[in-house]
Image 1 (cartoon, protein in one colour):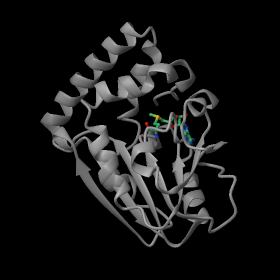
Image 2: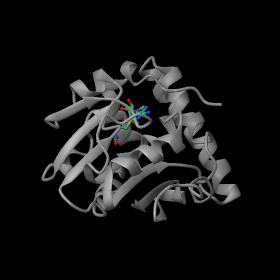
Image 3: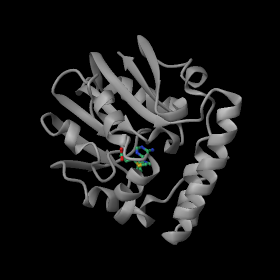
Amino acid sequence: MAQKANFSNIYKFYDFINTVLTLGFDRSWRSKASSHISGKQVLDLGSGTGAAYEQLQNLEVTAIDPDENMLRLNKFQNKIIGGAEDLPFPDNSFDSVYCAFVWRNVKEPLKGLKEVHRILRPGGKFILLDMTRPKNKFLKSLHKIGTFKITFLIGLLTFNLKEYRFLHKSLDKYPQPEEYFNTHPFKYCNIERMGLFNFVYQAVFEK
Ligand SMILES: C[S@@+](CC[C@H](N)C(=O)[O-])C[C@H]1O[C@@H](n2cnc3c(N)ncnc32)[C@H](O)[C@@H]1O
């Protein structure tokens, strides 16, 4: 199984490398995902450096992340250290939870889903954006080779081979989202693929 990435080592150039890795498309994926947000009180789960600031800045956002270094660069005002598996909020606290490029890091994903469900108000949305592998076998192989080479090169250039190798390996950590999100405590879950080769997905859950 893939190891956990230590984002403390790469936080300074995380945003730049992220833009390179996604060819700048992450902005449009974030916009699309954030358009599903309902209500004003939003939790940005695994907020990191606050890459979603542009999309969420007009909402009442609480940013949460286990990595203090990432949070230090985060522009949101309300910042809390913590992780998906144990959210430090009472039941029914938020209208929506937004979570981008995080879920592959969560050690106990089902526990995380239950926690998000608990802190959402009835009718609240959980919007999860992440990368996966393409469904098509041929495209999947191409994608594997591509991510191996790109993450290896970036890892070498930034002296953080382990962290970038994690990004490549973590794409195979869980099954395809359509199968993986079969079990959840929500009323429904709608999954949509995006990006070149469909290697990005958004999952929108409603409590
Ligand atoms: C790839 S970054 C994504 C950051 C930001 N959401 C974005 O869109 O750029 C992954 C983030 O997930 C955080 N993370 C790792 N484990 C987590 C967990 N169990 N719960 C919440 N966040 C976690 C990391 O510290 C890191 O900041």
